[in-house]
Length: 326
Image 1 (cartoon, one colour):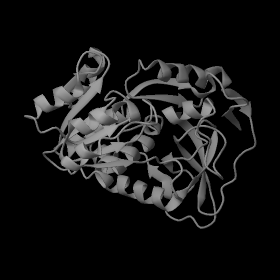
Image 2 (image 1 turned 135 degrees about the vertical axis):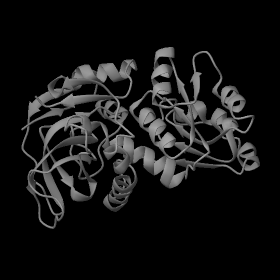
Image 3 (image 1 turned 120 degrees about the horizontal axis):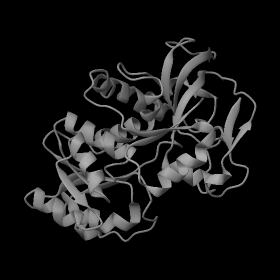
């Protein structure tokens, strides 16, 4: 098979479409013939040499894919050759084939084609596990999503609205904010021109956000705490704004607030399987009914993954950038 390899860390040109050995499904795994994968910020970090795959994972980038099962390993039940699926991965999505633990598989939702389904696993699992399983967003509460036009952001808006929450978003252009509004966002903040703390407080009669989904990390830490409501929950899922920040513990105590920080990639298989099962139970019915949809910015041939990385690094996209096997 062919896969995107990274002979040496570097810029987008470091991604090489190269012939490699086919993977073999082990105990509890299936082999998926990949139709499409999707680009995540973690893939860019891996390409740059800053985010190696966990032990035992595929060395190739790619944290999600869609495709058809072509082989079933020992100990697998409930899945068969020919099933169309999408999958959460620890690596290997930038390839024509990938071995996947059966607990990380999801069926392709009704009304979506096989390629579109590649946009779902990482965003649905990230949003559901952080916003709902950990931060426990409830109907009537306010969720603030930083980077509302990203793949994570566009899914977070839709899922929060589906459960009856109010949604605030930050984005860097009026066009991106317009797209967020189309998905249901109620409070629109242009972070280049407005202070999100002030705007969220103003829109919530001074209360603040009950839950904040943050991809920035250190840069926004203090202001996120300021923006939290009493009993608020800050869920950190990224470090685009740095890894070390100063925390005002007095402010956190005063608000009886909580901070969580998670990633999916290196979690044990059992934890990933539990998240995938929760997503299938709670999110898949919304997808099947058409209440929630992945937002796809564009499709690019997987062999030209370098071009896809440039698109994501330039941050001009809305939703997910897909890599299609052609």
